[in-house]
Image (cartoon, rainbow, N blue to C red; front, side, top):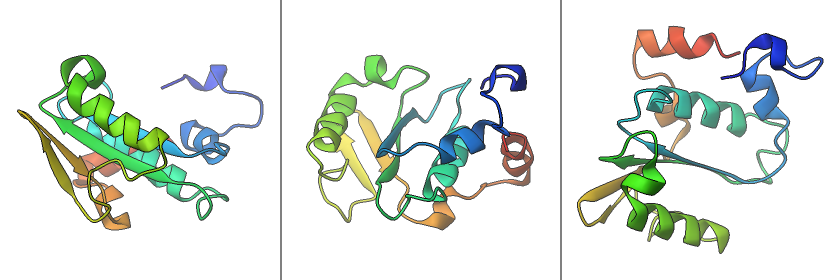
Length: 132
């Protein structure tokens, strides 16, 4: 996450910058990422779903497991399938209603509701609250 000194003038934090994103956003996270862990993915997805153009733009958070900081290297079949669907304008998982999909040994889980994007523990709320 960029330190405040590197933010463009007027930006109040990382979440404020995400509010400016005017395109569709697919957040493809490794569930076991020790640096950009799922709590940060949920925080980014929350910010993107609250942007002014949210009703016109798609925002999806997909967690791959087992995968860490480089899911595209650690789970290439799953990452490629999900990215291919996304670029074609399709849901990231095989079924628009699916919450999970298996790709061999790798499972993909999609956050399907606003509640799934909220902090899952008090610590997560405190930690990701510092991003805004």
